[in-house]
Image (cartoon, rainbow, N blue to C red; front, side, top):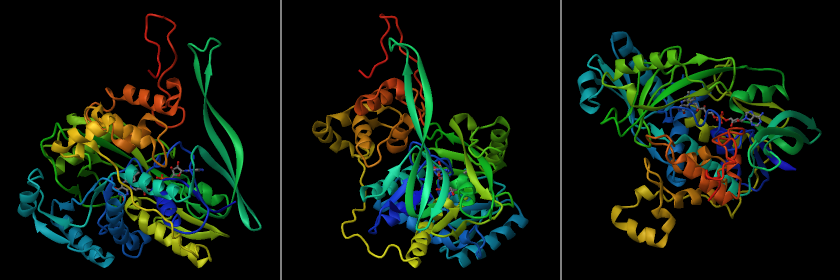
Length: 507
Ligand SMILES: Cc1cc2nc3c(=O)[nH]c(=O)nc-3n(C[C@H](O)[C@H](O)[C@H](O)COP(=O)(O)OP(=O)(O)OC[C@H]3O[C@@H](n4cnc5c(N)ncnc54)[C@H](O)[C@@H]3O)c2cc1C
């Protein structure tokens, strides 16, 4: 029996797990996918929002600045890649300038510091590639960007290190209150290989589901776009998720001399914060997102029409921007809802909703976790802190080791002398180290999210097969079972029978 079960291992669930791991209690983190950060927390603009945008009376407005400051602290504590770039909201005419004034006032009310409205020429002296048509911009110095999946993973790793049980491939499908605890009915999602009789050629992939029951005194719903479904298992419907897709271009930083040094937003409209031009922690640039309501909660397709629209909007702000330098397109789905704000409520006995966490949910996650902790404390849980809690996290990134120290480092750690990802200079040593951490990767993209392999210009074209070999070898798995990403995304389809061809193997 767990004291608390958290449903959903996105940034919100993992921030809660991190917070709870500091107390004496048994907690479970239940996730339907095969890794943490598989929903909105991995496909977003990665901005640590400054806090000027959400209306002051909303939960988003109340939690943004606290979350933003805590994000930067956590990134330092947990060695998560981040940059405090600052951000701009640009205005093209007098009406939009009035919007800047409103945003400045709102930002001050929300607790932002250092906001300023600057004239177009001054803005361009700091960001020379911005359009000559920009008449003024709001400067938000406290904001920046981070690596969103590393941030999520880092909090989860510390939680697991301190006793939280991570349950991947476990989809919650029912919740029943039984006098003093919830029975959490779940499907286990498993992959299996079906080989032909001589085990040489055919492979079939199965998603097998077993029903298992997990018991917990308290349940926290952090299920993102699925959070209304979880809510409805224990309480009357109170909100409905309106899945809203956002698509992106990722521009290759090595092909673009310099685009912007800070995050650039257009003036927000009722549709949202608009198409952003933003640097990433890896030295690339993100362009997007658009905003489109989709029927399927997990529809992360990218579409020509949306990309054309995004390119056009981004050009208006940065005219020299060239989307032909794009190395990837992707999309994420926002958990927008009919409620309009974050839905943070105690909705049933021993049940807390951290639901409908739309943007700026990545930024607010640490503050949302603080609110959840206080709600549990009010209910008499979390009485005692652990005195053996082990926080912190340090990652070796070979490319960050100064040139003059590399030789000695490689002599001592020869695996760091084998570069596997050429674009991003990621070594075998880093890949193997990532497999020894608290939540080991199970897929090629799991290694990508932990080390940065495949993040560069070739997007894994060169290093993907080598990463697959290392993953299969180190985990003792058949390469045929290795997935690109989520459950069911195997890449290899079988072994060749031709003895002259190299057999697919881990050697
Ligand atoms: C396009 C886009 C751009 C954004 N840009 C920003 C930004 O720049 N800055 C910012 O602060 N915020 C941004 N956001 C918002 C931010 O990404 C989200 O608010 C945040 O990631 C939500 O985290 P979460 O943990 O609630 O949801 P998720 O990350 O979606 O996690 C929910 C998890 O629950 C799991 N789950 C669902 N149902 C079940 C079930 N039945 N059983 C078990 N597990 C289940 C899912 O698999 C998922 O892993 C953006 C969002 C999008 C989509």
